[in-house]
Length: 161
Image (cartoon, rainbow, N blue to C red; front, side, top):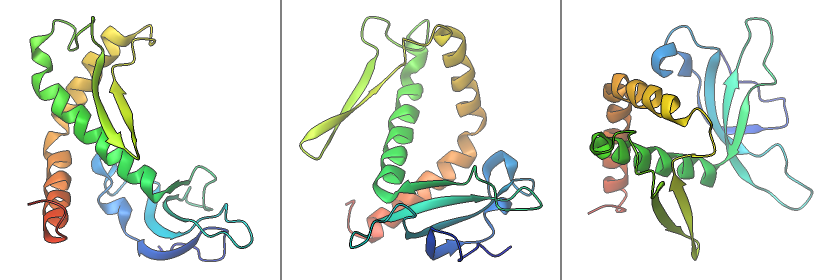
């Protein structure tokens, strides 16, 4: 299915068969494509680029399609990596996190830092973190494959030694 080019987000680089590789939803996903392009929120004289996940209901393009600035996509990848690293060692804690120190890391970005922490404000955190850990483990092969590809691409581009 072709990603529409007549909407406000203007695709430049696309993956139009994303539904075939959308994790557990592969071949049954409403996320039909990914694109990198000109952001829909561009103002006159100001151009931003973004990434977008295109969802299709079977009848029309969904309003639930998500558009993200590219730096946020990378920030999400950083967050995933940090979470995955945390859960490799989480077995050390009875509740899968250090209740006294729920901050997992502070990742330096732009002269400040992105705090990565367990959401202790969640009243169901003890149950939810167990479920998250279980699914992360079940999806490990799929996630790890993508991280290996990303790692190799970063290495090929000179970002990793």
